[in-house]
Length: 287
Ligand code: 13P
Image 1 (cartoon, rainbow, N blue to C red):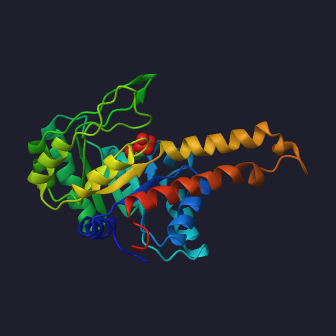
Image 2 (spheres, helix red, strand yellow):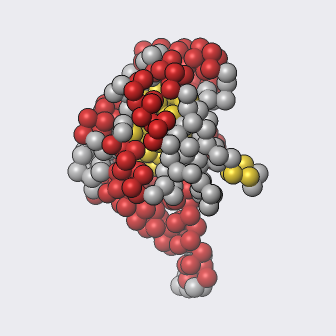
Image 3 (cartoon, rainbow, N blue to C red):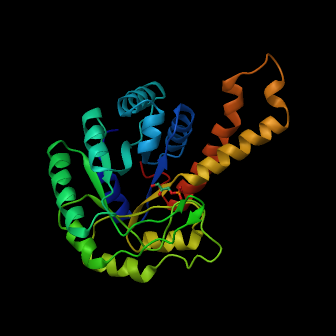
């Protein structure tokens, strides 16, 4: 079904649930995510980072693979392909390659430059029917072994970016990518409420969906979060299942090395993560 990411999130916002953005890295991940979205009749956003796009040989390959899989797997639930944390240049690459949705992450620029670049990209995207997410307040994470604490966005800066007509907004509320450190203070609901008061019904995005306690996820959804991104949890599940398979010596059984068998436990593990998240986010049956 073709509905834009914007419509998906508006419906989620109104219905008080969140659409999952599951990041994809290869064919197996995409297949697992799509299969569960269809099984649970849930809308789905497939996130593609710049690194994942490069790994898959480029954005055109990702578009072609996804479109072919939607057809050949008989997927009828709404699915949108979305650039995750795109630079200015890569937003244009994805627009040219046929993405339906992009995130422009200008959070590292001074706010005026973030505003100028976001304004331009909003115009270009909307003239082509593409949805656009913007970011205010950098979302931290592990870099070179050091875990940076997530920033809390300035609500007035959020309003400036929201007023440009972006379709959804990632506002930092203390969330970070990857594993949360033991001394993490939790999400700042104070910031989330202040942002919501400034941007009204604009759907908000929560990055760093791995490792946030369930009650915080539910509270964030009740306060306007309509999209939650998950990547690390799928990576961890994939790695653990693959390691278990190899440690049991199963890769050496039968007719020798078969990548389809080697990758199967990881693909199943991803399905389990996706099922759990869709239940938690409340998007089951919302397709
Ligand atoms: P995690 O890797 O922490 O799940 O975050 C994913 C994300 O926010 C992608 O933008």
